[in-house]
View 1 (cartoon, rainbow, N blue to C red):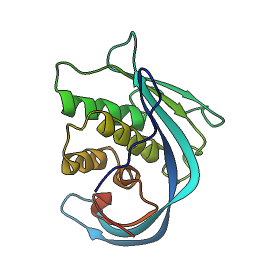
View 2 (cartoon, helix red, strand yellow; view 1 turned 135 degrees about the vertical axis):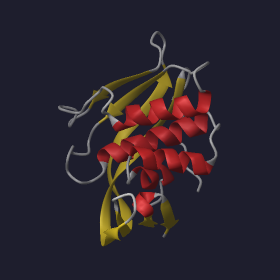
View 3 (cartoon, rainbow, N blue to C red; view 1 turned 45 degrees about the horizontal axis):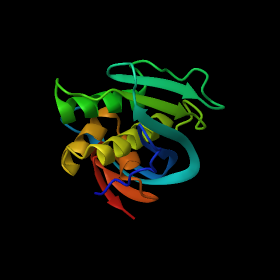
View 4 (cartoon, helix red, strand yellow; view 1 turned 120 degrees about the vertical axis):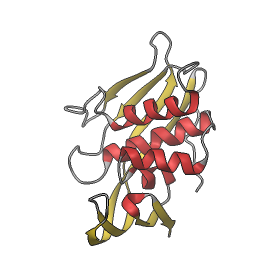
Length: 177
């Protein structure tokens, strides 16, 4: 799986990417597995509706900072519950360990309605991972997909960045269509 990067943002910028909403065109649910999750088979398709994720080097802060704007920003968490913030923190921890982690600022422009079932938070996390992996290619594809799956079942599809895919195993196995 190759995760396409976003467009650059100039000096100090890491990049900008569109984080597309998704719909499930088909969903088959199977018996629970040994972990307690139901097995699923799903066809996922991205839509034209998207948020915008822009990453830049943080000038004064350490770690990951986040600002949220846009027409649907109200109520979107900017703390540790935000999935794109979780994605950045987990990526940087795995890629850099405890030392030498760069400070990153995320600007999230929200246009996907929160709680709509369109996977906006997952899309934001996937776009964040794509941008970070393009800037710091320190993780193998397998590690990146595993990390995406730890954040949420729809995050691997968002990371992949393809128009449509068949998915299994809580989104960790994907076949682009």
